[in-house]
Amino acid sequence: MHEQELISRLRTGDEQAFKYLVENYQDRVYNTIIGIVQNPQDAEDVAQEVFIQVYRSIHSFKGESQLSTWIYRIATTRSLDLLRSRKSKKRFAFVQSIFGKNDELTHDPPDFHHPGIVLEKKEDSKILARAISRLPENQRIAFTLNKLEDLSYQQVSEVMKTTVSAVESLLHRAKQNLRKELEKEI
Amino acid sequence: MKILFTLIGRRFEYGHTSKKLSIMKQEKQDRIEQILNSWDGAKKAEAPAFFYTRLKARMEREAGEQPVKSWLLKPAFVIAALAAVIVINAFIFFQDGNTTITTSPTEESMQSIAAEYNLSDITLEEINQ
Image (tube, rainbow over the protein chains, first blue to last red):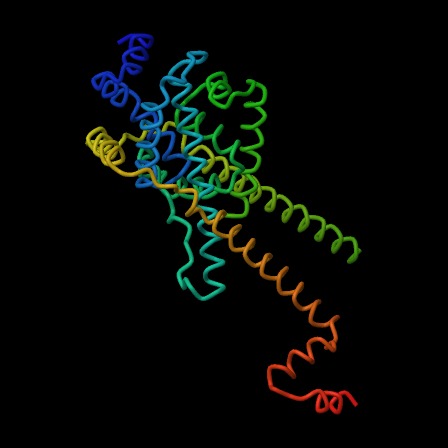
């Protein structure tokens, strides 16, 4: 199905078109999100939210970028929302624990192993995931889109609404920060 | 002569140690690069089976639910509301406190107390004296 036709049919609320969209994009969306949120259950939840948002706001899609770029943008924004909500829940749990209302603090998710990485690299992948989780948001998004989704610098810049040189700089800084983090780890 | 040999020996030892250190440093750098590249060539993660079915079920469930004002339950809102209540309470408390401290018992209030307890004027004057 051609992208324009798909968008027009989605705007009319065509269920078959929506199913086609989900089946075509679900893996890309899930793969992006799991790299950022580093938890399979959360990744599925967020992926569902992404498609619900696409379904509800397809009327506001102006077609200035490709449909895939728009969907990647929603996926990264939603993933960051989840990370922020995790942080604020953790803070709230800490405040509650001070007042003795909540003995259990919200813990960090356990070590993440990306399902697409071969077994021999499993341990290294966990160490890398831990280091990535400490990166600033923008660097984390750029690194995940480039490394896991194989998006080019041009595509990453379109998703992040920035320039190619800014993406290059983000990735350079991300690698520098990761090297520093890894140096502490090993 | 002995000193010369010692110096040469130390120099040799220093050179050996620094070479060892640089090898260790290089090994560490290699290990970092190895970890950094561990996501290279990773297969893409696939969405769980029956993803669309679960998505449709969620959309139908959400369509049937009443829209909840979820922002009311957000920790930021709860904390802000709590802080506002505390500030208002503190403000009222200190306002009252100031009034009590600065105002001394006046004749008027004493008369009202006297009237309440049926005390005569003489008794009240006596109290004042």
